[in-house]
Length: 138
Image (cartoon, rainbow, N blue to C red):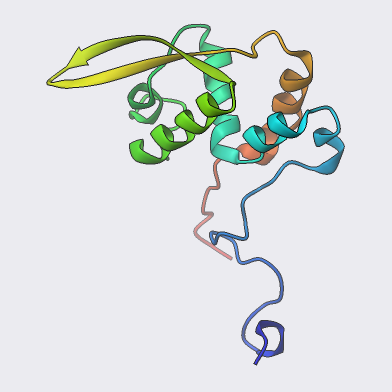
């Protein structure tokens, strides 16, 4: 039985599942190269880059996912993974490290803060990237 054939299963993506990744709208992706599009085609990576641009200083994944951080609703491991993906795509670079309780905390800066196309994509997708809030009702 196909998913669309079931009477109690709605057709299309189910919110909160892997199908709902809040990808960039096509009108924003025309401004980017293929590599930039791949880097920015995930909501967490856009939120990380936006937070680094807004702060104007190097940030670590731990700072971003802390209670006061811009991504306090995202697990530290998830933020670290996406920060490494941004580094792989050349969007961020490691600025410095600090030793913390036997571990090393890595701080990153944006490599694309002056790129107008990326700034316009981040600005255009800001509403799309806002964390989902449950209304508690319908």
